[in-house]
Length: 288
Figure (cartoon, helix red, strand yellow):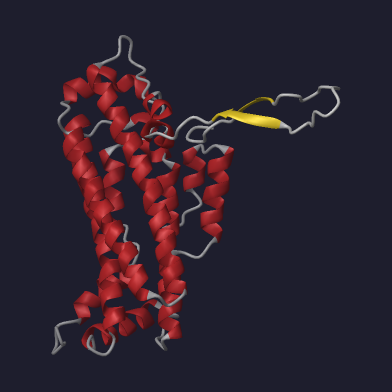
């Protein structure tokens, strides 16, 4: 396995011998390859995964592949950090949750900045190999849907259009059945004595926390981490949409999607709508 040193063995002297006085001491280790940067990170495997489909390979297809593979790696890390933040909140460890959110927000900024790199490719350069991508589509990213499901945007209809592998379907169905990040926040607030049963209850509870920040400073900062997460997700969505429009205009996307027309609708998606709604209620003598 990549990154795991293999052990090569050879018979020890006397193994299998019938000579008197010779004891069978089993196999001896003759060589254990030294762990290196490349073997630990599986660099050879990693660099073999960029496989342009244009023939002859178009120069800019390599950039397109690398960018999207890197996105998928960051999606994996985001899922890792969000799950860790949820465990911390379940344990009422808000300081540790804040540490995870700090990393999450930094990754979110990086996701947005990666669009700048993709935009060094012009529409003509993209169109030179775009047809080779059909019917694949970013809409089919299972990890992106996992993030949405984990954060509360749980729509079973997505499974119809994703065409997931069996492993991906198992992961997605597990996310659909599990508590969300927003569920964990509500449970924490309920343990602190706040009403969370309805949308109106949540807005009222948030208002109390914001207007009495000095008494509830840990929750006050936590709510700001949640709203920043939601805002950065929306900013990345918008940045991505503008990039798509810059590349293909209003043409349909690959895989039969509606392209920009569909993506524009996603800008109304908010993971934590009550945290946005409470802003309208603030500002009348609040502490900050």
